Length: 264
Image 1 (cartoon, rainbow, N blue to C red):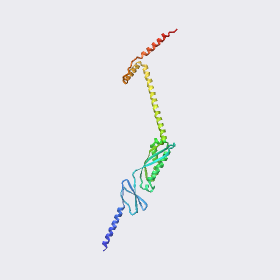
Image 2 (tube, rainbow, N blue to C red; image 1 turned 135 degrees about the vertical axis):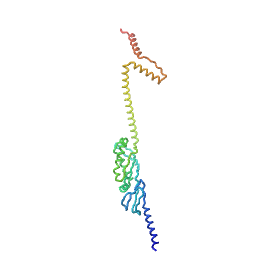
Image 3 (cartoon, one colour; image 1 turned 45 degrees about the horizontal axis):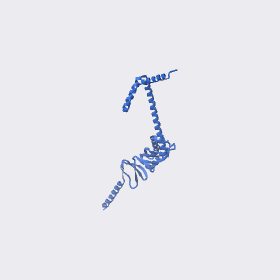
Image 4 (tube, rainbow, N blue to C red; image 1 turned 135 degrees about the horizontal axis):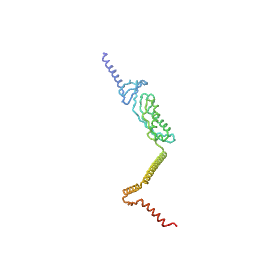
């Protein structure tokens, strides 16, 4: 008589055990970790893959994503060391390296590192001049990362990168910088032109010395100039006059001047 009664009870017990096993099964993806708390105390980390916890509230699993996360820091208006007001945007990349610390050591890891990044951004920009902020971005980015990394280690976080995205200047400062850049370009152009003229004068001096020592070179140069003129301006008529004609004309002029006004 007892056997038929025991069979349903056994089925109920087996069913209850299977139910507890099923409701205690958890799955963590490859990029997830399960932080296990037993009666409120931390006992370990599970995953990735299939794992089991004691159900009915005895153990609790909190899933943590350990992939790299990206946070865009909102635009911050700050003053540089040389008293210039700028608006700076930045981007932060970080990941969770210790899932347990990211829950136990800090209430909201994402919000905490975001506020820390904003504070560090304002502090670092305030310690540098405007020219350094604009021209030495790699240096500023390294300082930004170094400024928040020590604090995030205690929270189980690792800062991958922390970089400025954009620097917005006041319109008046943009006009001043544009005028400065134009002045620098004009200065550079004048220096290049002066160097070219100096080099050309040296070359002309050398050419003059060479021609003075060899009169035939002057005639060759003159013929070369005629060839260039004929190639560029085909409608131009060129009359070749030997250089001796100039000396002859001067001698004749002196001769006529003397005979026109003979000495008394």
